[in-house]
Amino acid sequence: MSDIRFTDQHEWVRVDGDIATIGITDYAQEQLGDVVFVELPEVGKDIAAGDEAAVVESVKAASEVYSPVSGEVIDVNSDIEKTPAGVNENAMGDGWFIKLRLADPSELDKLMDEAAYSEFVESLQ
Figure 1 (tube, rainbow, N blue to C red):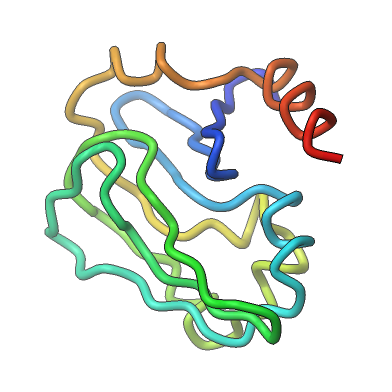
Figure 2: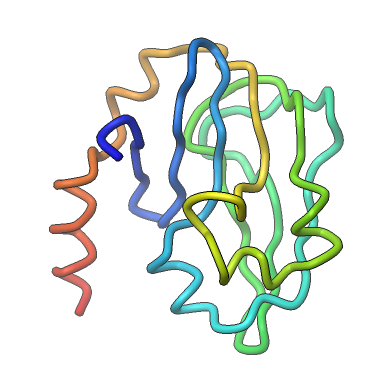
């Protein structure tokens, strides 16, 4: 999973060419508890790094999901809108939120790799 980058807000981004797939980490979904609602943006929307990209609600809390990178939304995971528990079941895989056409690949340099993110999460416990 070394091709994945992470934020300190517990979002992840996996890049394939100029397509960035974004979701929340296992740590985030564990902290949220059972996810009961996901609101995703419209396809075609431009999102800047750090902007709200989605909203996730659980039995414990509601939380914004921020985009780690800038780009245009080219796809959303309608499966998790229909079945939000998919986020809990596979947050780092099928539970992805959105796909963006990456606007500025250099933004990835500001994000943590897997080792740095693991250390960050350990520091929270």
